[in-house]
Figure 1: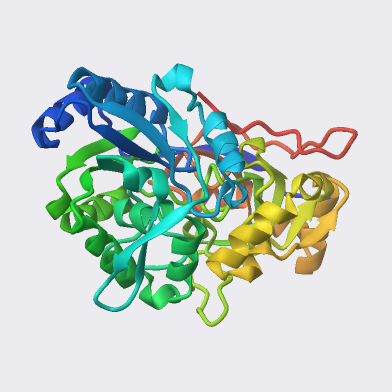
Figure 2: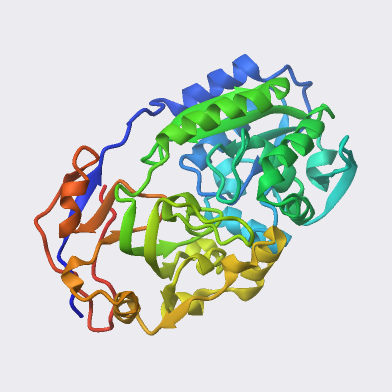
Length: 416
């Protein structure tokens, strides 16, 4: 197989981050968490997304609540992820480092929700039964661009209330509204939920392009809607992208729910795969090949349908039940459709190149990334070097792509 030589490049990203995160969290809690009667049981929402410093942040919140005389516990709040079952969601939390030993409080997962009322527009407010029976709830989530819809509020605290606490029923109700109405729906449902007085505060987290905690705010309930909008704008300024907007071939080494809700971030690869929703004009990548599914995704291969080709290795890791439940709940069934499956990395990449019909393979516009979350380091074909000036720095001389005897791509990207 003839492929152009590639070079290792390192992107230039803003490096703002919180230096003493534990102290920062404690100060935010002291400043913005209302007085809580001693003995109160407090539910803290924890989702399936791979938030950096997640264990430290949650443990700091738990320790603070204990110090003021409360009884905190963790609620698994992740919609239909983990197969939508209590056991599956507990497995997800454990894989993310959340255990009673590491956090210092009980961890409760359940697929049982109760209806707590209707919004003005007739939406049902659902809530995890254990969270609703607590004396108060602290809603925590990373605030970022959503992979299906746009609006003033996207992925964040309101979505955690609507989908995380609402479980599969809340997720299904939201996704049935369609991408054009989802931002408005989470404001409607989340805003009405905040009016119940059950939420004591929100903890909004923004990460920089290096997946480090750049901003963390403890937000009072009546300020969550507006403050989340401001934090979303901040998150957009940090959002990492591939520095080339037009490629013939994008190779993604690993996908998974721990990197994006869709396994591969749609904002990075420029594909939505939602029926009736136009695909974005940029970025424009003619072929996308994904080679593996991260074990932390627990077989959930939602987003596999965003790729054109994949490997037998990845396909054998797919848990159809978990993947199908996620896609059916979101209503985005195209994202679960299996692309062309080839025996190994070499044959998948070769088939992608063949499908492009490029007369001179050396002119191929190519990029290789580890996943769609970690984009500081990547590889691009030698012919693209002139297009990244001012965006990234060259870290190597050009070299040829190598494969093992088994046809596995022999290329390490993670640089620490």
